[in-house]
Image (spheres, rainbow, N blue to C red):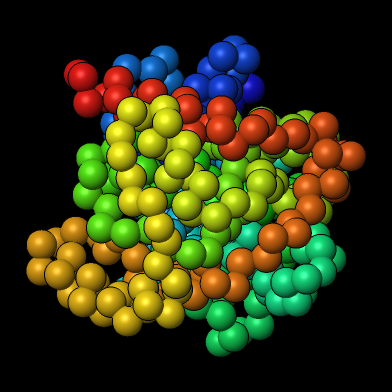
Length: 326
């Protein structure tokens, strides 16, 4: 039984293919270009572009199960329409290929960003309304549109489930992810200041376990939130300091003050061809994140659970330190 994973070279993808292999599954890793997360593993690697329908159709041929992770995560604009194309059109192409090849089950990775965060004083679960077109950031809208493509496939007979993780942290972050870059910045003493605000952070290994449980137990056409725990960014920094043996800024700047400097930080990073540490949009995400995200549906139906945040940061710091020593 062949399992195909799009976006296998990403943070979640690299962890997922290893978990599948550990269970003796036959895996086809579908990547765009970067192969660091899958190098040396006992699996087939196929290069494909989700925006090329015929290409992704060939890549998924023969697959019994498909995990669709290929996406563009970006909260600062739409990159000339690329966010929508990859996250919506790419998903449409994957759904079409799954239908053609009669894939037994598709597990689609969406995001907490597909949901409206307000009202923040009420529990956010799967019943919460999604972001309306044009209402949120382009990334948010693209994830809603991607889910719509999956549900359109379900109406045509596709057996698919959707998982919605929160902000993912953890080891095997090769590229690295935005939060991985932030942790590296703290470890290297390059973070000029902390900011107020926080998010719901979840361990990548728990997300992988939840997605695999969704493949086995999830109900067709259902979505499952996979949260961890809400914590301020300053708490993450304290754990990084403890486990990394480094000093980090002790005080967090108010979000309004960080917002004043955000355009300058963004411009400085762009000049040096680096991803900005934070932007006005990412600060807005921290400002409006919901602190009461419920994973009860996944706990009840999938057996999902999330480990302590301190354990996640400890293992992430240890992995980054190990990579620096190579």
